[in-house]
Length: 234
Image 1 (cartoon, rainbow, N blue to C red):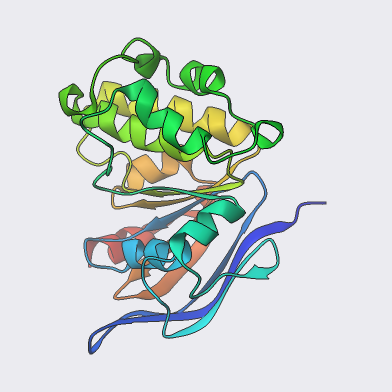
Image 2: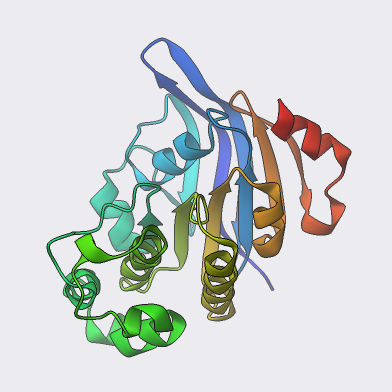
């Protein structure tokens, strides 16, 4: 029986006087990829930041494996089993690829590790060949891969990816998509914020289309219709 890993109910988030996210509700099942699609400023990143604890919700519920996490600090949410790869990567540029991945491994117990560093490198073979290169000298695509690999090092049950494919060359996108699907095959659930619907459809089991902080459409990838394209065009 498939069970829900994460469930949001009537989530609202404000920034100063701006109401950014409005009554957002959706769930993510075990081993499922949910894509939040929408234009710039639609509220996708705000939803992800609220889940990981970087932005406190004004109201609503966020339950991870049945535990309420709304308002908890980010480090506590990460320790529960939620990984996060931000849009701007936030890798340690003065450390090597290997050292970046090693840091979160220090905070997980060996018996709890689903993803060893060897397994992570098998998922991202491009990084394996760059393991001694410092983050500063990686390309944008390589830095994005490293951000996901670092999130994976905590052996999470859920990973939040904010625009992982944005600005990447088509050949890099195809490689990255393959790696993300391999992570899914291992049973990890994912929520991916994506502005490009074509890229989202390469990954998603289900999608939520967001406009001005509200979910305007939701459904399976194969059910995407002209309404979704209109939402993304604004």
